[in-house]
Image 1 (cartoon, rainbow, N blue to C red):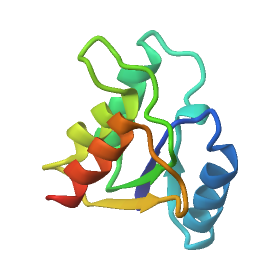
Image 2 (image 1 turned 90 degrees about the vertical axis):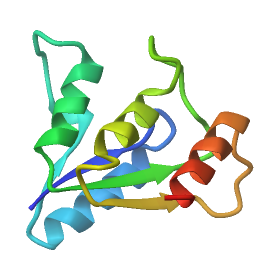
Image 3 (image 1 turned 90 degrees about the horizontal axis):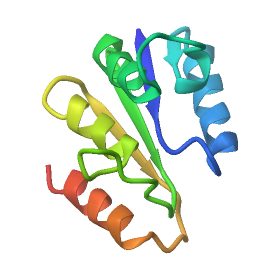
Length: 113
């Protein structure tokens, strides 16, 4: 099974590494932005393609929302929209953190599905 890991990269390195390790220990393939290397497309297009290629998306959310893209939402939020009606999505939220307002809105949005 191919599993796409969606989150901010900066500030979430340790969490992403743990999720990747767990996926691989279970015999599955982790898909992460860090592994894409140079491509003709933008990094965000590559990530959205990674979501499409995956069988499952794991979303790891901390307090930060991230920079808004041209579409008005963060790259992670775009990945969530891409996965929403196409892929199973598992969301993990850091405990004990105070989320930025846009991040809190994203968490509520997903929680209402």
